[in-house]
Image 1: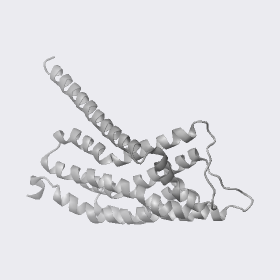
Image 2 (image 1 turned 135 degrees about the vertical axis):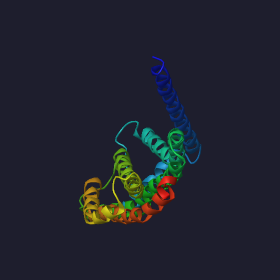
Image 3 (image 1 turned 45 degrees about the vertical axis):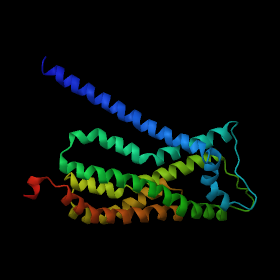
Image 4 (image 1 turned 90 degrees about the vertical axis):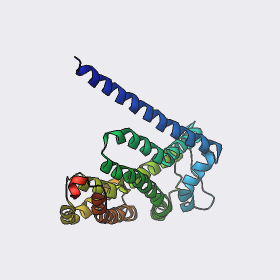
Length: 251
C-alpha cells in the first residue's frame, strides 16, 4: 500500500500538470484569436484566404453563401484555425515543458530544436500551399471548366477545401522531423532510409494523389516537396544524432 500510494500521487500530479499545460495552450490560442478578431477581423481574414480563388474567377465574380449563417460562421472558423496555426510554437512549447522533466540532458537538446523546427515546417507547408499551390490549382480548374458552367464556389465548401489542403501540406512538411526521430530512436538507420529512397518517392506520389485534388498540378506540388524534405531529413538526421548522444555513447 505504501508503494502504491506514491505511484497514484505521481500519476495524479502528472494529470494535473497535463491539465495546466493544456489550459495554458488554450489560453495562448485564445489570446491570438482575440488579437485577430481585433485586427484585421474575421471578414478581412476570410477575404485574404479567398484571394487565390477570387483571382481565378471572371472579373466581378464572387463566391456565394448557401447557408443562412454561413457569412457569419465561416469567417469565425477561419479566424480560429489561423489563431491555432500562429499559436503552434506556444502549443509545442507547452508539450515540451510537460515532457522535459522526464528527459535526460542530452535528450532535451533534441526536443527543443524539434519543437522549433516542427512549428516552422508546419507553417512553411501552409504558406507554400497558399502562396504557390492555390493560385495554380484554381487557375487550372477554372480554365478546365466548360464555358457553359458559371463557377460560383460556396464559401463553406471552399473553407473545407482550404483547411484540408493546408493541413495536408503542413503535415507532409514534417517529413524531416519524422526522419530525425526515427533515426535518433534507433528504429531505422540513415543507410536503410537511403535504400528505401525509391519506395519513399513512390509513397510520396501515392499520398499526394490521395490527399490532393485529381489534377497533376496539385499532386506534383505536394509530392515533389515531400521527396526534397525526405532528402533533407537524411542530411540533418546524423547531425542531430551526434549532437544528442549520451556521454556513454560518445565515450
